[in-house]
Image (cartoon, rainbow over all chains, first blue to last red):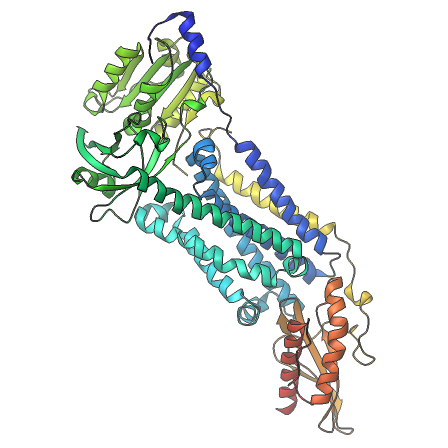
Length: 459
Length: 161
């Protein structure tokens, strides 16, 4: 900001800088439903009549199978790191869509399998007991069904390791790499759809539509998950410059590279980082930028919770870094009003720190509320105080009392501290329980839900 | 819907399942229920397709026939194909294959009916000429042909054994 001055002129200037962008979530969801309707249409036009019970069961199997095939493509698309999804809808929201669609797709696949085999068993004159026999026969005799069976097995494995309690017992790396088998599962189950699906055998346009759907998803995956990161890293060549301990257990990693301001990163966004050091090459982890990107410097600040984050402390200067991003939609684009309240819980300060520095606003427009266990845990505090002073922004913290009592964050206290809180946009980052508590307090204080901007990677 | 609004996952599961089941049942119920047997063009005089799909898929069953005239009828295994099961019944008189009837074959939609309308009579002619299941695949009806061969072979096997 060139000038830091109060008054109406400054506020008008701020408001001109605010152009809230709408999330494309609604049109995308409409397109999703339209696609599902199109898939049902494929079945509808190809099925003139249904004869008997076996026909009913088989057709139910066909409908569930077609929907599962359609959703499989979307499940992969949701993780293709398409910028419109990652940066506009928000990586966290898309990840939740992905989890939801994935679970539903596995259910559809199982329904499809069961109904189809049951239908075959009925046609063969046996009841439910013939299902196993029909399954074995189909795998042996029908084209590509063997491959599809392997694909289904992989899908079930992936679904299994993603169930909450099992997921929490596995290391992130194992879970992630097993998850990559989704591509194999999708490929293996694709072919039986074309070679045994009535709709595709009989209707050339349906075949074309399927090739276009799966082909474009494949192209997006190759472009955004492989080619884009390669180009990004060839261009910017990131290296670790220094590792700084901020508070006990919280470290900042400073990175240099070429033309970093042209990486397209905004304050509040994150990258997936892979440090090319022994033992760390295999996995990439998402960490937010803890300062606005500068032409020659990027910084992340990380709390040592897992193996990976603890190992960051020992990174040597000069270590090469592979980054993918920027991702995340918790940026200034979300803002719709002049005044902004930033709420940070613990290490959730990182994106808030970057936003606190760069969000356009006149003196008095910005407030940052920082929650930590104790004053020693207020990482980056000195910088925050300096920014607050330079920008005329307000900085507040809430820590536990010496007796360990939690600070009171309720609708009343929030309203007392910020009487016009209902005229603020709120950006929030912190652990789930904290975010939930603050959300409810904010709603109680009259902040509309659409002005509470929050990113959470909890499923 | 805000990400932090409390939602019950159970509610979502129940809603999604109920919507899927209702939608599918609704779609199925909107289709006319015609029996495929009515629209079938009988492919050959003796190979009437109007016999309801009967005997089970496990093991060919020896049915009827009198030792006196030396005529035996055997129904083969139901052979699943990608478009539905194929099952044939054979008649053997004095060790000679005299007739093959397709009891079940795919005829659910007009395309199946069209293809199998010419394929089934041709397969029957081939089988009678070859006196075995060693018959050529009818082009355009590969799967029906394979199912036909399989079911025919199982019928011949159980006749022999």
